[in-house]
Amino acid sequence: MSETPTHMAARLGVSILAAENYLADKARMEQPPMPMPPIPLKRKRTGRRGSLPKLYECKGEKRPLHYWAKQKGIAETTLRARLSRGDTLEQALSVPTRQRLHV
Image (cartoon, rainbow, N blue to C red; front, side):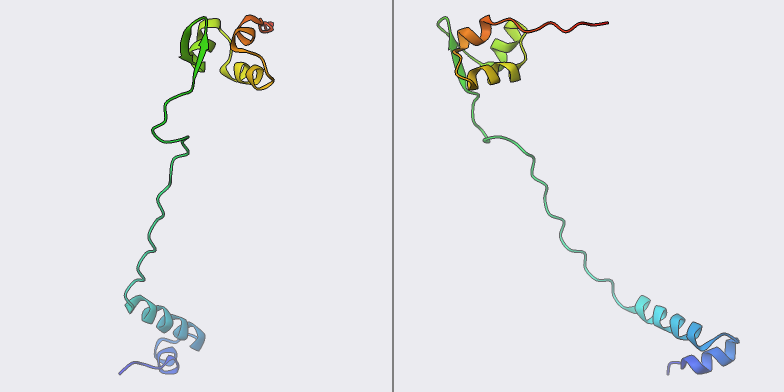
C-alpha cells in the first residue's frame, strides 16, 4: 500500500507539495524507459554516384577539367566560368589570369 502525500508530509515534516512531487518522481522512475527513436542515417552530399568525370579535349588529348586547370595554373572554377560563358577550352586556357599582389 502506497503512502499518501498528506501522510508523508506529516511524517517527514515537509510541505504536501514537496511530498506530491517526490511521489510523482518516484512513480516516473519506476516506469520502464521509453525506447529511443531510430537515428536517421546521414547521407553524404555527392554527385552522381559511380560516374566518371567529364572529359574535355584540347589539342587531341582528352582529360578532366581539373587536369587542364592544374597544367595551366588556373583555378578550376575560373575554367568552368569561362566555358559556361561560351569559350572553347583552348580559349579558356589561353587567357591569362590576373596576378594578385602579395604585399
